[in-house]
Image (cartoon, rainbow, N blue to C red; front, top):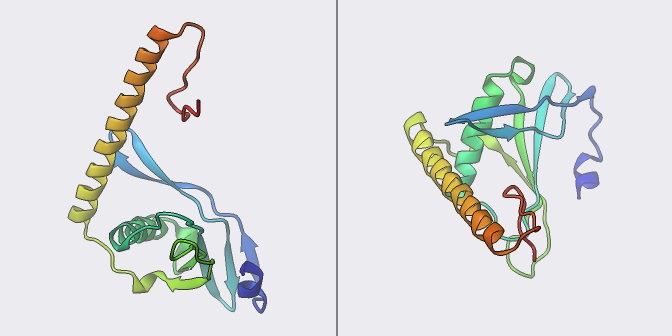
Length: 158
């Protein structure tokens, strides 16, 4: 599907994109890195690939993502004027097949700063709660089994 989408595109250039980080407070940042940028006839394109198989983003989550991405893009002079397209290869229904939807980010509603900050505060609170829970599990686990190393940054698969 990617090949079909780019089949007729003859880019003037293709470049890597340097990673950017969106600070959300208290030492947390959200990484943002597109696979590449390319230009055709003076227009710069910034594609973003989405491959959800289960639990795709809902409308509110999608709007938050686009809000953050647009803010990051606006702060990078190399991406100024870039057309931010989302190439969504997600499975839309359980047992379904992947289909490519090309979404122009300008068609996605975005949030104001206040709403964005409130949503990110909820995310940070949830992240910190999960991190604290993992620390607690680690200390409980370490007390029960000597010699077993539990890394709080990794899922315990056993």
